[in-house]
Length: 424
Ligand code: PMP
Image 1 (cartoon, helix red, strand yellow):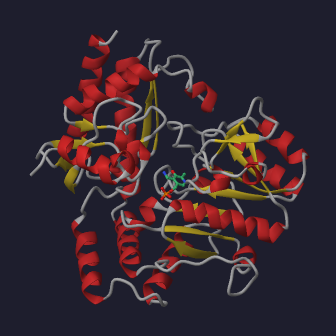
Image 2 (cartoon, rainbow, N blue to C red):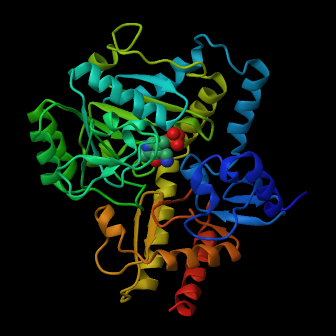
Image 3 (cartoon, rainbow, N blue to C red):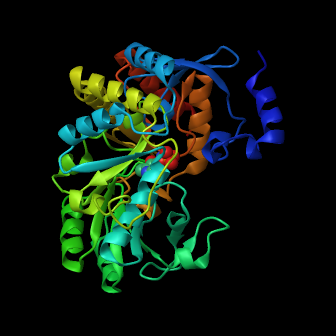
């Protein structure tokens, strides 16, 4: 088989940058990207045949580990029956029922094929239901790549944002009002401008490294939404089933009006979902005036993978096992870095981030910006040489699965120790 470098050089001729999603190009850490051919448990195998201990886990879906045998069998059985109907099938109802019974406040749900679609649709619904146009979005939270969400703070928050991508019309940008994570005042300042349909956020952020909400922050957002007649949307695409057995909403006891899901609920197949209050969800077509649709929405293969994954997750108490692994890693790393002023480590459930900055943990995007990104790049490449794949950016969270072992965690800690000793 050809090597990653050969695939990459050919891919660059046919696929922009050689990748179908920019972070895969390893641009933030240097070095050429790897190409993979198989995955099992906590390990990936590159096209060269090298094994990598995986801390990306497909950016979150792989909570059971790669290629869980029961999920594989279920998907194979489904594939032999039907790939796609383009019509309704009982599996949609089964996954909807499972999620409705598991997730408090998810009265109704609709399935889509990605996290991007889930947030885009939830926002349209919020606008349709409130009759208002503006959306508050936090710096550093990522909700997919739809136009109105590729907006970052301009010069000074409380003003309008700027697009973070070419090709986003100014008219879209003007509908997105940036705010600072964990900063209630920045939110209220935007709400006071009026016309806000919704606040969207990751209730535990995983797209600026792992950042937890400060105590009371989510409750305050709930109050503000009620006061200003705006809807609260929790984007749990990443943190759902990872920071709690169900949702961050349950962990912090704050009820959003709408949720967005993805990743774990598809077990690695392309799935997203949005849902919440039935009175809102009933405003979607065909019942109501808010249009939303999808050829592959509720796809039977994806539904089957999701049903199997969530059932195993609940049956085998996977949440508790992954949270225990996370806590164990946290203990080991905190012991290793105690007294250091150049790194800090945070873990919640099966997610964690090592920040290359000392002092208190960062609480927002600007504070993450103070990390030593070059050193992160050296750490990433050092770990890769040791046979461990980390997310190739300081701005990403790492993921554990139930297939990781204590020995796997020890490998991470030992390599980190070696790195910190040699990279001063
Ligand atoms: N929301 C969050 C919180 C995410 O982390 C992501 C993707 N990492 C998305 C939305 C977008 O999901 P997708 O890549 O499936 O479109």
